Length: 354
Image (tube, rainbow, N blue to C red; front, side):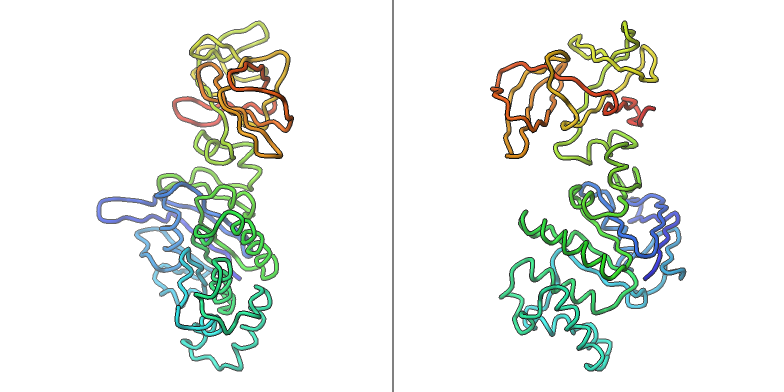
């Protein structure tokens, strides 16, 4: 196992810089997820850690050893790719054994490791099969088995579940997390799926445009996002937002929206005239006999929950409720926002306001 330190890491292709001064420490045995939209630099950053991309500047250390110029095979890492990268003409056993054989290890050395990995990953009955005879989840397990047999200090997962269907992704998330809990290796996991990040990570690193927006434990980021980008990226359905101007109100201050609707901001440390954006997560909004009017346009039942989509102050909002109320499209409901679940952001900078 190994701790990983990235200090001022950046990547440049010609005159174009795509990763900007990344500072990140990953503890020994920690499961860290890099998450962000496509093109944010997360896979490029992982490939620099793996040695598949040259580091343009900054310093990378793995297990206390400077790794900038180390070739991939000397970094003691294993990488699991989105595409599985299996040899179609080799059996499951031979795919897993390919690395040890290339390194000219004795079969008596690696055979017990393969059998142990196969048992751990529920592949023991499939070792003689070719990849084409396996399901997508089984192929991904083979790729994981190949990584486990390497006995690395650091596991790198690059969007490994993107090719799987929704049900299988849920299953594989659980299996990867259980694998980490058994092996205790350091893991860097890249995904654009915020649900994967929330359910698997010890810590999440949210990236955008080659920069880190926020680092923290999943619920820390969910409950207290540092800016509008993080607030909008984490959560499904995503956080609701309405921008307006702070005005004086009988009970303190309120947010005045474009159509004149005023939303009270009890206890908010903002002054009249400030341009702010209010954010509230759908599940934190309560339907009430008194409050802010919302015109319902679409109703989306999911079974356990119902999503109500409509307009508040001219902006699109979503309310998630577990009550199976008889609400129809076109109906007006009133909602209230509990004070402890209201998030305020500076509209211009996007930064969170206290």
